[in-house]
Image (cartoon, rainbow, N blue to C red):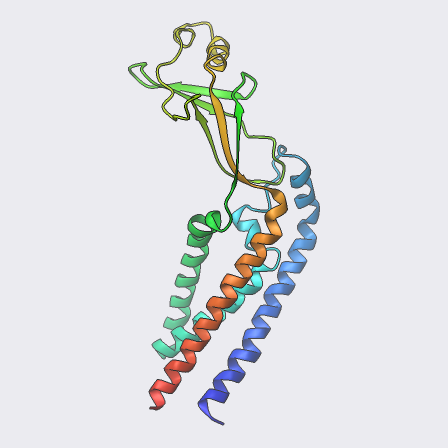
Length: 234
């Protein structure tokens, strides 16, 4: 048996087995968590995390199949380079963990342009405020928007001109009558809450995109394995 054929069998059989195992585990976990996911899509409060939450997103749906293919191909390539099993396993774990941390933080938010909404900041939305030490700048904390199941990327309070610099606090915020007079005064400053989010309906679109990205990466890694084997034979 040639080395190319041996590598093809290993990548094909073991790679497909790892993908099938990941898909089965994801299916079981998705079935178990389906009541929680349904609750998260119909109400935005109550402690239910959105399916877009990194840990939940990476363990359900079809994306884990791509992760498994990528991890297996990565391990084979590192094994060919290291030629020692234990160091190759450790390095594969480190690289894969780094990818799993970096991808949802740095790449996933930019896969699809988020929806942008802007709404007046009313007193009922203001959850709190802060004033710097010299009393020259106020920061307003707005409550979570009512977007069940959505992925809230950012929520920012801006002025009517669109600036995040809100300026000095109203005089009511300097009084000793409690927070409510200050909140009412802040609500009269024509502030707006700008929200960037991904709607709940885009969940499976993100799943398919990530599956395609990681399968493509796995194919490229497999090609690198064949290239390395052939180079050593030449």
